[in-house]
Image (cartoon, rainbow, N blue to C red; front, top):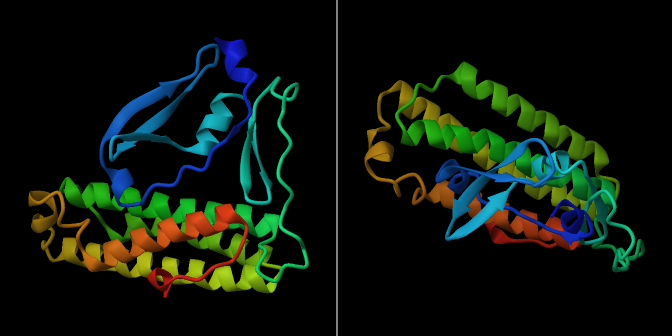
Length: 227
């Protein structure tokens, strides 16, 4: 089974909302012949795994080619299909590869900030500003790397949308921390949909989905959910 797995070249883009990722966790993906395991998130009857963890466990690597994210696996080059050409550098809406990679990592950083916070609030766990600040600091660092990677007008336009998403996550995080301090989070624990149905939560989810799609396409686009 290991040989069959290593003979496949997969193009996979798996993005789930930061809030939804806080739910239905527990299963893991085990790759035959490899040590380690990858957490699996189930949402809407579908299973999702983190690409970086999957590449690490499979002893592979990720690379970026135009609008493709490629999972390179050991021994997967013999029958490797040809990749589509990257967007033309003369296309004013084309995103640079460096920014695409950094932008996707910035989204992941925001997800890793929002997901444990949502899980803690929904399960009535202790939440403090000091605890949240560690996740926020990592998201800020990821966003700075995306800013440094922005070299074209399209990159800079997309960066503004990433900044807007960060501001929305920060506002949402601050609101939940304050509610926790004021002991006003019971409604989130009683109703599983209370957090998901919050307008700011929905804005974050919708913008996150759009950004993931845009970065995966390699072309800058705009959307009102990120404004």
